[in-house]
Length: 122
Image (cartoon, rainbow, N blue to C red):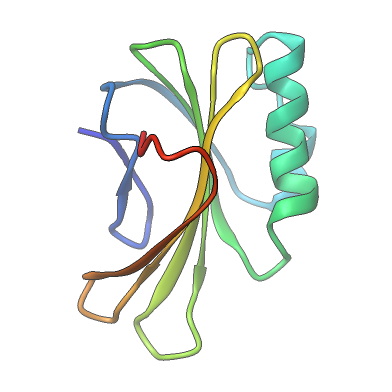
């Protein structure tokens, strides 16, 4: 099974999750120790610093059994019960494998998946 967000969405389902680090605040996530190589750490920090706004919650960094890092955060939507999840999958050497945003309806069904980079749904 993948990384479960507090919204109920699962991300990172290709390789079973090996370890997860949860952060309570965005700043905590930016300053966090991810126990990752320097290039991976730089990509993770970039995600938390530049990609997501202060409206996002539930900051997670996970490492799967393939050695990839799955970074995710979710934001409650304008419509009550809807939400969006940003996901960035980073390879063990720091290269971005995929980067996408998923939008969910109040019933939890996927409305849209927009790829920013790559097409591999981790």
